[in-house]
Image (tube, rainbow, N blue to C red; front, top):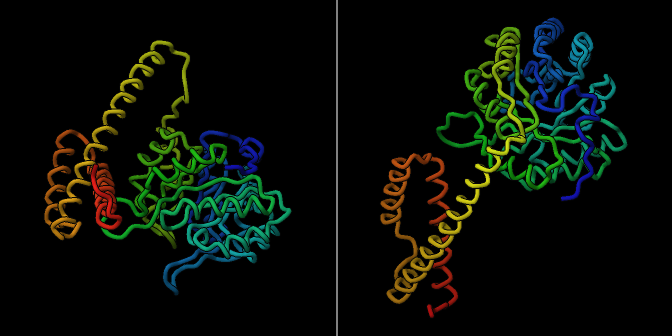
Length: 364
């Protein structure tokens, strides 16, 4: 995919990897944001964040202090010598943020879902040389996320980056927003030059999970972290449960391991190549076995067609799913993997049987 992207090293950010963006979910008072910034200085953070306008799910919740907080945020950043960033959701936010010389803007997840809103922001920024980060849309929709970068790029914004904050889910989950790591990984594959920042605060929704998710983000070679920090998290006016104290932020950063992308160790490289060759061979066998399974599925489809039987047999599928999942767990595979794997196998089996049912394709 062809996008014009200026490297982070030219954004005025001290560190290229890992970038650390930290600060309160919401700017609440001038004193609160200043004290948070001063206490975060020990983390050697790269960017101070703070929400000014807060899109809330329901009315009568705290929706941010508004434009007055922009100057508080900017002054706090100046006090510790780092750029500042805030979220913008429309052209008015953009104009007010630019007027107060906010250094970096980000587009929130609820805005990314709306191409009209993204285009409005892109038009307001046309001709302005400012970095813009884009959070993933609320739902797992990679083309929609990519579309936001394309709209900004078309308006001349070349300092662009992504924020992975997880995706909304219905039902029980240990995450506030499920990470679906495969989506930002695919984004990285399609646009390798695009910096990707991970937001463990919104992914987890729980301060005790921020460290492990942060470590996973670095292990997956993403470019940095955006973590919410507040001087008194339990009293925060928004997202109190996921914010951490600046002191906890310091300890988390010290505990994080930054792994190398590669090495000159020939013993390691030879062993890695050997293991990768093994993976290639196993994958060949996996494809052959899957093709064999789908051949049997087509034969089942033919039998069903000849006897006027429906494709979907729910009781049979429930039994298969339970048995295969339990077998996978016994072999050390994760439940999420087994669920995804057999859902995919089932969908393909249905497609293969539909070919027989609907197109009159007879087996040779």
